[in-house]
Image 1 (spheres, one colour):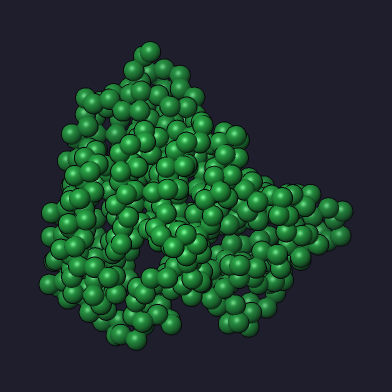
Image 2 (image 1 turned 180 degrees about the horizontal axis):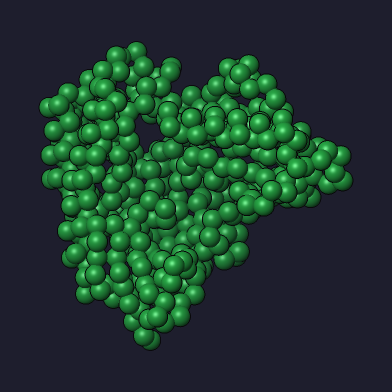
Length: 438
């Protein structure tokens, strides 16, 4: 059990939620360390006397996980195991007043844009000279790079603008500086993230500048892979595909959340597009980049989703054969436009629909993967576990996509290095390979 009055504070940062939260936690970590404060991230040892919890407030499950984590550390404080608990991030931004009343022994609540106030509680200051520098918490060879904050889209189901505000693009020169610093510290792959990467540049350059950004990033020496996430389909800048086709270090990969396959549901969700327009866009993307892997995300159970609308989405998935796909059940979020509608799809029906889509996608993925057997791929090795090296092709993002498994008996490989492999067998979500001897 911890005792109070220790000579030097040690801080542990706990991160919940998405990759954008990971970047925020890495910035907190960098700033605290820059102020000479001993700080760790997701420490497995129980030696920190101060905990900073970076919360997620996106959907019900994520909110509950954040609340449970806060309560766990608040209880640890009551037992004398930690001295101070601070909470930041999306949940704190959105529900601070209510949470303060319910959980009274948290030492401070901070919103998504209040890092200087959080630092002040440590007698620390925000150091502008650290702009562009970031201590990463992922494997050293890849890093997330946030290109903008917030969102201007009017999607009826989404609470992100309530927690992250309006869209604000980060200037290209700042992104390039950060990318160069990451590469200098060993990063080989950068994953571009935003609430809406399609919108990048409109606010500061008065035009969609994502293609310009990616073209300049591709010039960064030592940057082997650039991967694009979270592109909005409406207004997608087609010149991005020209850059992707031209630059060898931009992965043939696109994460483009489409949310539904029924035009009626897309209208209810205020997505600014139709199924027909979406399919035309997908066809154009695949025509320009024939070897591209498209990842999408769908929502089942939004208010008004009839069985007919759901079957439209099933047909949409079957017809378009996405290489990667994830599904969420609809979460009824306060203060969103969808919240004014009746949440009329029962939870068990939402879950059944999710499982039906994932079963369909599993079959599609298995067929796509089977076509890769006997083919050669360049693979980035992420880790070694259970007697196997685990890597990814350019068609796979960490944590969410397929993995390539290589038996260690087939030769020594180094984590963080690229290697050439031949695929020997495949399952729905994994590829098995042997390294090609140089």
